[in-house]
Image 1 (cartoon, rainbow, N blue to C red):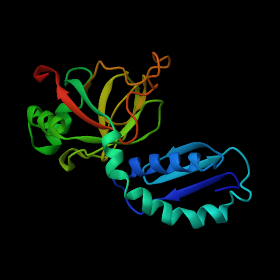
Image 2 (image 1 turned 90 degrees about the vertical axis):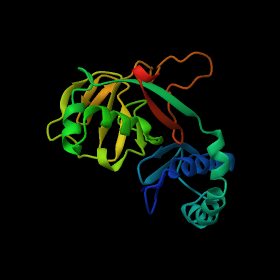
Image 3 (image 1 turned 90 degrees about the horizontal axis):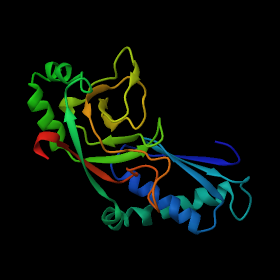
Image 4 (image 1 turned 120 degrees about the horizontal axis):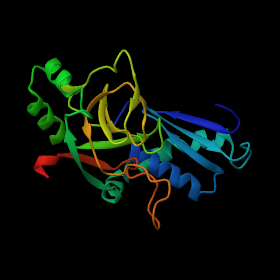
Length: 218
C-alpha cells in the first residue's frame, strides 16, 4: 500500500482468519519487525509500520517470508482456539430496543419466538473489531437471518443494542447512527474506556466466541 504499509488479502472469509491474523501479528512483532499497528478487516490484514521498510526488514523480505510463515501458523490455530475466550451474553429480545424483531420474523416466515431461538442457538466468532471502539463483527449468523442493511439508517441506535446486518451480528458499544436490524438489548458493557487492572478496553477480541442467552432463560 505504501513504504510503511502492507495489506494481506485472504482468499476467502473464514472464522479462522481472526486467529490466524492474531498469530501473524504476534510473530512479526516477536521477530523484530517495526509493526506498530495491525488492522484486521473481513478478508484482509493491514500491517502498518513505524518506519519506512528497509533491509533487513524490506517489502521483498516479508513477501518471501509470508507464505511459509502463514503455513506454519495455520497449524497452530488449534492451540490458539484454546486461548480464545467464550462469552455468554444475556439479551432482552424485542421491545423498544428490538423494534425490528417482528420485521425479521415476517421476512423469515417464522414467529418472533422462533427467530429468537434461532439466533440464540448459534455460536458466533469475533471476526474483527471495527466501525466503533469495541464494535465486534460476529460471524456465524444463521442464513435465515441474513438480510441486507436498512435502506435508511437510523440517526440514533442506543448503546447495548443487539443488531444484525448482512452475515454479521453485533452489539453497539456506543450510541451512534446505524443501519442494521435491531433485535434487542444487552446490559453487559462492551467497551470500557477506563478498564480496571489489566482488563482490555473491549470485552470481545478477535477469535473469541459468543453465544447470546435469552434473558428469561438465563
